[in-house]
Length: 416
Image 1 (cartoon, rainbow, N blue to C red):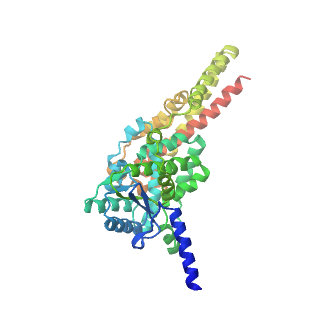
Image 2: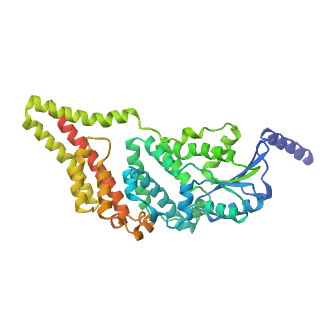
Image 3: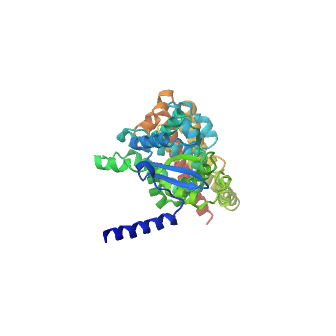
């Protein structure tokens, strides 16, 4: 009777396997982190890793050396690979160029995410991305070609930033900075749990509940991108090393057999026409209101309102620069620039102040080397010159936004 039961169970299991022909049984007792698929006679071996895990790094090497694939694909783009493989990552930073290109917001997000991973990595005894570097090193040692299959990190971050609302950006920056400074004690049980997770993907999943656009750009789009790049890789046997948070989405994409249009998700989205209308509309309304006040209530009243606008913008921005302990000329520049930049969407007061701060107090090599560690300590945002430039940007921008609302309300109310 027992044998009959086992025979029936074996038949049922065979039926289940036949219903899912794309998934093969896992050889040599690989853990569940390894998924093997067959696609048009090719074999794709997905290794899902935790980005802060020595166990993941060891598993990656084990799979590559055992499988000897035709190619190894990794969840890296050339920029991130360069950052991971070169210890002098921040020393080559062209801060003034980043400010000119108005990419300080992207730099801040990159710094927040990287510092968060590094913080956990110190507790776990392994640095972020160790398993990805291990994959490239194991491939090189075995003369196996490497494919960098991730989307350019700069495109990813700019797509995420441009797709977020103003308040989502404020929530991300404030929440991210608050989380960095919290020094939560992790016991052995918690550390063991973290080792089994893709910590960065999990953090993004949590943020995605509050800001779905962030999850769409950072996770869902990259699931499609990574899957398509792996599908296009040459060779019959492919080992792909990706964060565990991408595995399920990639399995779905690969099994669907539908090619992804990479050109669509490689574009940096243009700002909504409404943002441009509002950006130019506010200055137009302010200037038109001042002109109308001058015609109906006299030049003196118009002058008083214009002075109020100047002070309402200049003072909060200057206070923001002072709170950041900016250079005196940066403080004066913030005061003078904010009323003018508030009347044009081309550039903000924060970028002007940051550029002046970087010019008069540029960060030195030592500060660039330690920025990832310094970003985890609140007081270091005032002593590290690179972080102080970012702080100047944030605080003067907030001051200018506050001044625009206060000054605008005063002028519009004067019409009535």
